[in-house]
Amino acid sequence: MENAPTEPTSPVVKTEAEWKQQLTPEQYRILREAGTEPAHGRAYEEFKKQGQGTYHCAGCGALLFASDHKFDSGCGWPSFYDPAKAQNVRLRPDLSMGRQRTEVVCAVCGGHLGHVFEGEGFGTPTDKRYCINGGGLTFVPASP
Ligand SMILES: [Zn+2]
Image: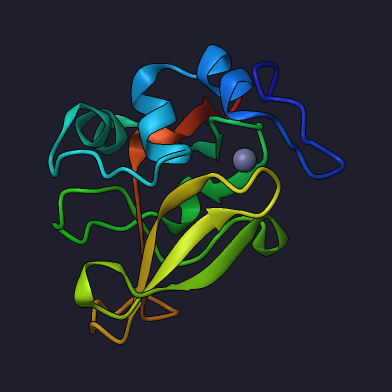
């Protein structure tokens, strides 16, 4: 994979000003401000068309998800049933919006990715749905 971002070997720590400079406004809003992109947005439309490949953190390049674990949940956001590299994905309780949810963050740079839901009966091997903002991911197509 010639275009694959370099996998960080230690935690990536930057100031908010540095992130702002590096990321697009949309990436910054998602990764650093825990924003949520609109359902069925542009990133999701692209996601549906993408073939085999891997998904990396748009902030630090860490490998997060792979096309092997994609499934169509119909929710309007990229959905995976498992991370590609579990150590790069951290889960933490999120009690915002008056609901108990589990937030998914990049373990390397702390960027917000989305939420994970369990037991919804999608019939995937894990019965989990990692509901991820496509705008916070960089897709790297598998080499042919
Ligand atoms: Zn990251």
